[in-house]
Amino acid sequence: MKELINLIVQKTGISEENAQKTVQVTLGFLKTKLPAPVAAQLDSFLSARTTVGVNPVAVGANA
Image 1 (cartoon, helix red, strand yellow):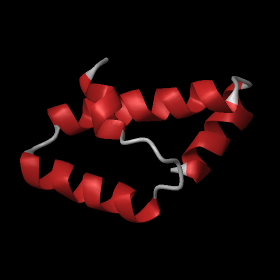
Image 2: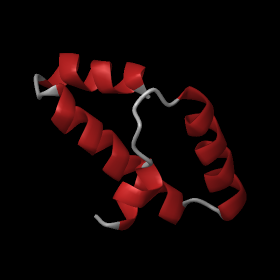
Image 3: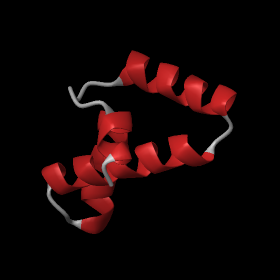
């Protein structure tokens, strides 16, 4: 997830904090729209690769 955050910062010029929030909200939204098995795979993938200590599902649920 850190790689995606860095890419967003580079491409948009927004702060790392705002890019992190953007990724979290986007992933949370995607998980609500994807079929459950795909959403679970996305969650597993992110859990294995997450370097930021915030759960994107929890943040997305509040968006």
